[in-house]
Image (cartoon, rainbow, N blue to C red; front, side):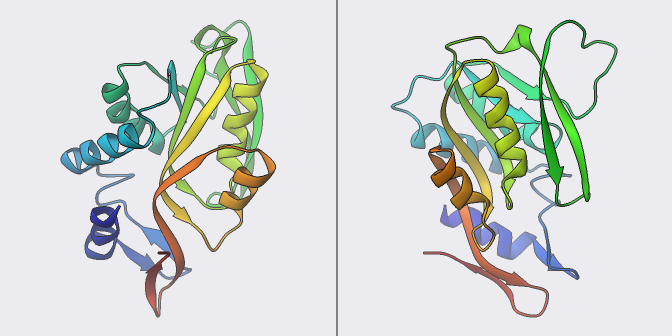
Length: 192
């Protein structure tokens, strides 16, 4: 998505430590008008698929998933990173190693909200090592639901997550911007 690449260059930047900062429009402050375009693009990419639910992980994926869900007219369900008092009864869990936070945690999803046979589109903001996406895939498989695909806003294609998910898990991953390389000194280069 050319408009997304241009927005990343214009409004994002690579910080020291080679961290991509897009928090001015994607995952801290949200440019809702632009997110509508992202939602429309995911709808275009998956228009020929039956989708019953959109699944994401808290917190950064929720806004993107909600905007996308309005184009499919389906509910959004999100995996929580901590069990709270309002989650009780049977849950699906999966372990996720966070590259950003340097920790491993359980993601939790109430069985009430993901049922056998449902067709699920996973939506998230980033794909790097693939751990969060693989954790969500595990939740869908545990529910005996069907993964229709995964819509990712930004994929760090120089890391192995996209390849792992596509090849090892057989999931159709559609990334709107794929970064070939990035560094604080040299900036960002996208794949063709």
